Picture 1 (cartoon, rainbow, N blue to C red):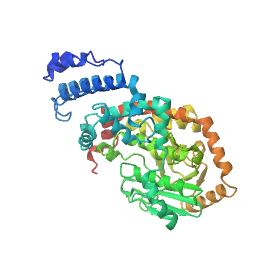
Picture 2: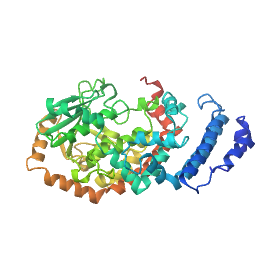
Picture 3: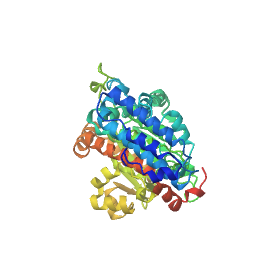
Picture 4: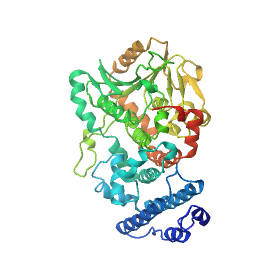
Length: 469
């Protein structure tokens, strides 16, 4: 819907002044002009649109006509945001990062953009209000986050700068590094990191939710990945699920069940969760971390060198959704026989992270489409699952299998292993290919995250309305 076309009948049925809304829609600022002038103009336009929307009841309390009017106004606002960003994303990014000398993480980028150009992205108060709403009741303000990040990632300079900022170690990891080096273990709540010989084992423990990932686990997981990469005594990282409390899997380790669908339905997972995850710890497993040191121009100090290590995934019981996505970025997968490996994102109504980019490299395009679009599953030990698993062991054999694999990976030194890893990645997924994929993903996942279809799928497939937090 363009800024000049808001259906009059929708507005009148919702009780809004058609003339007033049409006058507002027709006043959308032009793309031309300086960044400062364009930012001021689009901010005025967007704030007027927000004022109109506030005259309508919240989506959960409104009639169908009122919801339609809100969506129409929102579409005009998103069109204006898109129009502005097509011309001024580079200038905006340089303004919030001081000419790309400040390495800002995703949350900092969107927060500073919202402060610099009010209305372009949700304010902290708007996000607090949105987080208090269940998914069916959200007002959709987070789409602006997807739009903004998509435009940033689409530009080589700003996009690479943002990706590199997300590859720096977190402050929490730097705070805990001494503890790991001195004691050999760090308890981060839902994540525990243990140094065992030359291996660093990251154990995710969210037992009530079958080791699902959510806002309570994400920061701890990234911190744990950073710690393994930073500790010079660790040569190989191992990902493993903790023991669960679920009645179907009592006392068993579960590798992971993907995104926490209960938390998602109840509105406890922000849209930025998807991007923070894939640009954060998942990308750090795949590409390593960049040094926090910076050169005089504010860029990562390449002379200090990036740090990456080999990774092993120890899959027990199942790797579902996001947990299955991790199999695409590690170097060796050990799975207990019969473990289920699959991506139910299509059934849920979302995009399975970067699996659309990576899975075809492992299983071929046709099988990847079957998995992503039609829910095809693999079971460890079956012949076709050999493309996803390097080793299949019997239940009870995982501890010994991990020890053997770590010894094999470290026995002949890791210099050439890391070099081979880097050159494989250069041919398969150079940074700009990943950047371009994530630019598309940011916009499309925002649409999925806020779609009524996702709510419907969670209610019908997951029975989310009946599940308590």
